Image 1 (cartoon, rainbow, N blue to C red):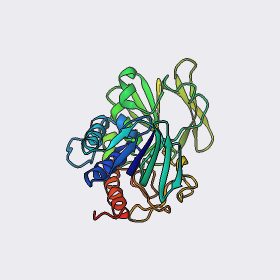
Image 2: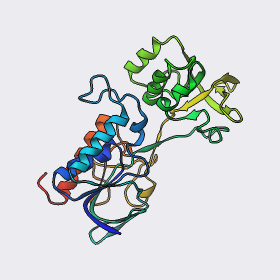
Image 3: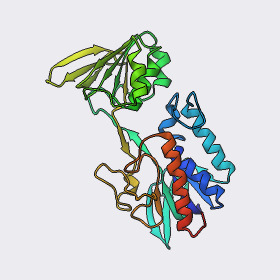
Image 4: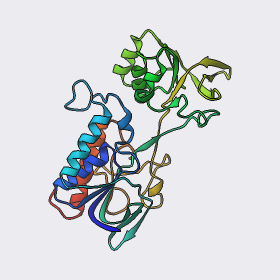
Length: 306
């Protein structure tokens, strides 16, 4: 099957569907390749704070379907498939996917990021058996038990806050001397009486046979200790999902897409929005704005008056 599109959005998170919504409303034939999971990382976040219009925060599993529905109502087509190859074709681009080939006059890349792994013994073997990237999914199963959160940024802090009312103790292991999350998150963590901090340290191994029983922790001096845990939640940063763009657009040393202020990449007709982009702020509201801006820029590239 071969599908033609004015604008092909690749990525099914808040940036991608915001781009699709704007592009479809501008009247462009718009299609979205979402990948295997709709909503990206946001779909597992219990409360996205600071998103306009939601004073008390909004669950990612509510927000993402709302924007998706708006995009499809505006006329965007959606396929739950990943882009496998991309190549220049007749002044535009040919993208292959399990859902068929797409001939696009313009592309908006919005495939976001993936969570970085610790890369330590036991992490892969015990994933789904105590090792997790989703506190809202697994916290109810860990009631009254000790857990470990690895990381010190916004994602780690948010997940730790969600775990606080469920777990006996929440130990935050962070390689730095202080957390790097938003001040509002840090202040709320400070008021919790079952939070423990292990700064200037890293997790050297996840312990357990059939399920997680603890972690081995390495401090800055190289001393190793063990801590009991029934769950280990890993949030040590994000890696951009840009392998499919290698050799097509310019990437920086970390693999993020380089754009100008108008979200234009080094390849004519390809724009980028969201956390795969160098300089992204990593906030849901910013990703939605970038998706909209990328659609407007793509429209102008196609000769529209947007």
